[in-house]
Length: 68
Image (tube, rainbow, N blue to C red; front, side, top):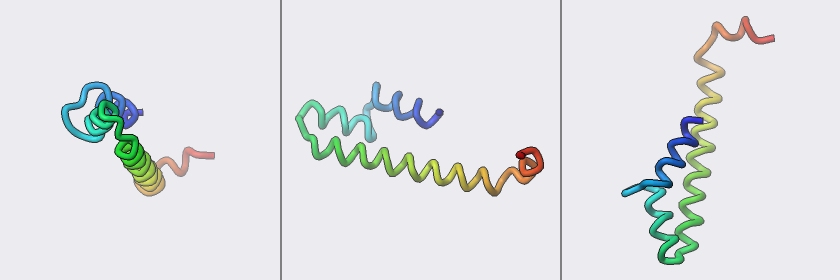
């Protein structure tokens, strides 16, 4: 949820970064740049999800006893 909030905040008020690139591309009708930036968001989301799932499996050994 925090990652989603960060993306939304960066998209709304950005002076640099992917949100800024998308904002500029929208103004100049550069759909190719928008699609690449959205693909970057998707890849970052998948990588973050994989990392969190890996950490959930390895880090909290105490949770194994709680789960059914």
